[in-house]
Image 1 (cartoon, rainbow, N blue to C red):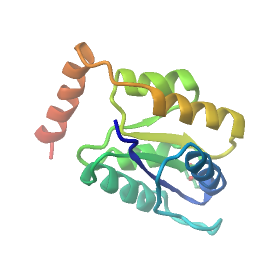
Image 2: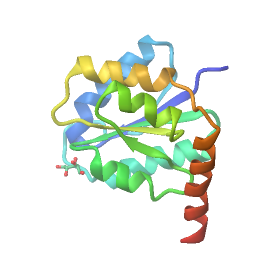
Image 3: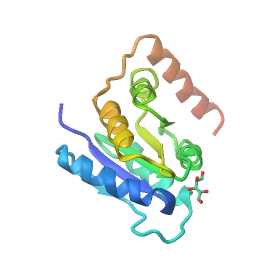
Image 4: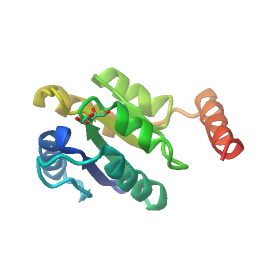
Length: 151
Ligand code: RB5
């Protein structure tokens, strides 16, 4: 299957991590769409969560990687966009499970503090995992139903 385009965004607190991940992805042969922020100047994380989540849910063959200081605000905001399945993860195992069980289309990471080594392992784990379907598909369909029911 063709490699997805990776839409990447972060606030100021995760800017350094975003720049690092962008280079990592390019080295892995991915096309990267960087929606900002483009400096360490203070910005609001919901703006970048929106940009990433809209691009992923409206795009074709796109996945997102998003960051803010803790990853919490960005994940909450991204999951307000219908179709977004944004998962805040902290290690390669939960990165893998967020795809295998939850079909996460957006990986959310804490940028403050971050270790390049663990970030690289998380990103690789997330990108190489596959949704397992079966009982997990039933559960993800229930999430979609919740989204439709409480618009
Ligand atoms: C910004 O200082 C910080 O609040 C933000 O990056 C994030 O951690 C929010 O959840």
